[in-house]
Length: 287
Image (tube, rainbow, N blue to C red; front, side, top):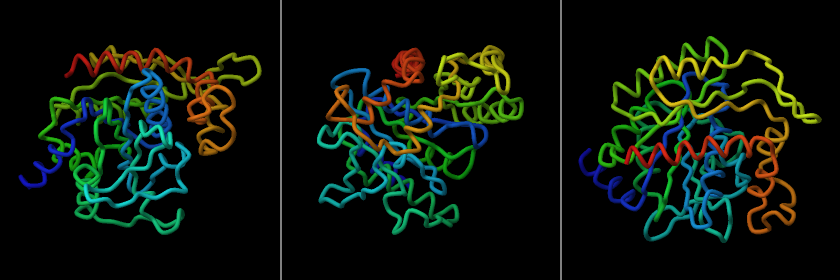
């Protein structure tokens, strides 16, 4: 294991910050938050370099959300070459088991040891290069994948932090407590909590209606003494964009990276500005 850890540490030596996106349960929009975080970090600076690693092995959705699910990774003499969502810009690298499947609809039926080996390869064999941020989309809950990540990332622990995603529903908030218990058990610093699906934003007038409830995430963050990064309502425009995989014309907003241009036009992008500022400040303090 020491050899593997050394290989991971060596591969990630030029990665400044590693952010794990966690959720206590499924269905809270963790992957969509991961995609928004990656796009917002990318857009935070003209020179920002971001990587997205999808370790939700049985439900990889990041390639679709970033509009690159029709592409594949390639081998080079220095390891796997990730897929770049911004094309020739080469500043938004993406890696997922979804790129390795023969067919998009193929299921991944793996036991723990094979999952562990795949995660190790993603960390040690992918040519990540110089990155300001590596955002890791994890499966819901706390499982083999999370333990494998913490084990393989032990050599770069000082650069690790986590963002936790929940919805206002009581059952989701209860599961967040278990998620936070995991972060404390493995000494993983939590930058803050995001309350997703906090109401519904009308696409016509922008008025937000509370479908479930609201404010539960902020109250929990106070009780658990962690930062509250912000709330995000359900945004049908964002859902259409991410479900569509970035299809369409970027217009004059960003002809080099159309997905970013279309994302920046959504209401969610404006709300996410405060969240990404909090994340950037939080990871800088952790490091």
